[in-house]
Amino acid sequence: MTEVGVVFYWESEEENRYSGNKWNLLLLHDTIKPLGANLLILINPKQLPVPSFLDDEMKFEIYSSLEEALARHKEKEFVFLESPRNIPKDLEAVPLTQFKHPRGDTLYIIGPDSSNLPLSKLAKKNLIKHLVTIRTVKNYSCWSFVVAGIALFDRRAKLGCSNNS
Image (tube, rainbow, N blue to C red; front, side, top):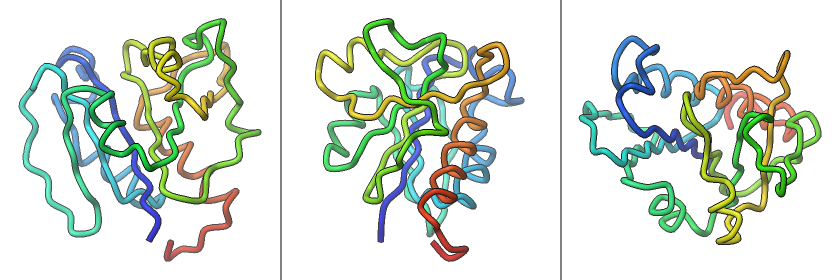
């Protein structure tokens, strides 16, 4: 079975203040599971409390750094999703509307809600093969769980996934 994971990358409790609680795992889970994800990864560098999470159909992992998570899943294709305004000038991003999703094991890495992914640092380590952006009105940023939902829906539509896959 193909493993499709989503990495939510947060740096502090304050960055999740709009969700209603510090770690709303149910919101993340219920956004990505119906759209085909079977792996949920949280980046938690400040070791914030995370409630227990059980789901027989979805793996759940926590790492203290994005680099640690990427090293653990180095056999997968990485798709970095970032707001157009946060893409460094020396990197090229593909609009999601033009992106061809990998068919194999894939991690969709989404930046934190109130900052951005360390794209320049990751590019220097040759970790960025796919850099994708979702164009919005006036280049507004979207919440990370919304970006995950849009990207996974796009994947299903373009790859012709059935209701059972």
